[in-house]
Image (cartoon, rainbow, N blue to C red; front, side, top):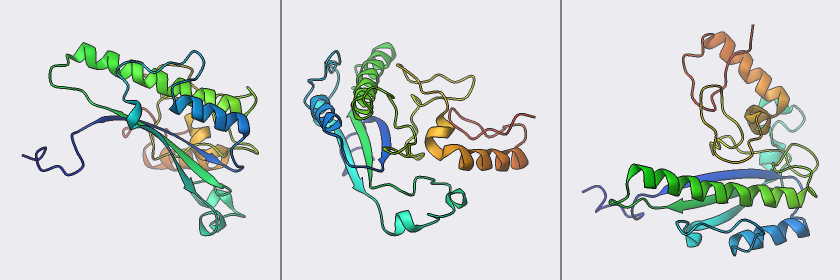
Length: 207
């Protein structure tokens, strides 16, 4: 009954990625975005299972009060990216139908996520002239948005990352060095044995 009354449509699977931007789009970056959204990236063709009509890049404007908050003392906020001009939200959605087996569903997810991640990496590589596949903090990017869990950026020990090239230090990409260190200090004081943990939880500092 809940599904029948659901005004937003049928349930879907989804994968999200993100990057903050300090500077506007580079020409090569814009070209790579266009190629990805039109399924024309070199060596990265969308799988048959992908719904390209449900794949998008949402662009949000930043600035003014968002950037003004804690601008001079960046360590006083958990969202360290306070110099952003834009935030890009990479999204793709797909359905798993009732007749799909668990093995088939896992393959569909792996195929779509691998294609989606590769597109994201290609875009950031184009924007940085091949220096990085990720929006590493610098003059172009101030990293990613924590509230879009992205297991390609890295995971804690004992968990599986998304397929493809993994960045590794997801805390660095989400929070930067200063804020991530302070969050780890807090976790060390509150949860010294890491009882509350998940793939990308803030773990305590090693003794």
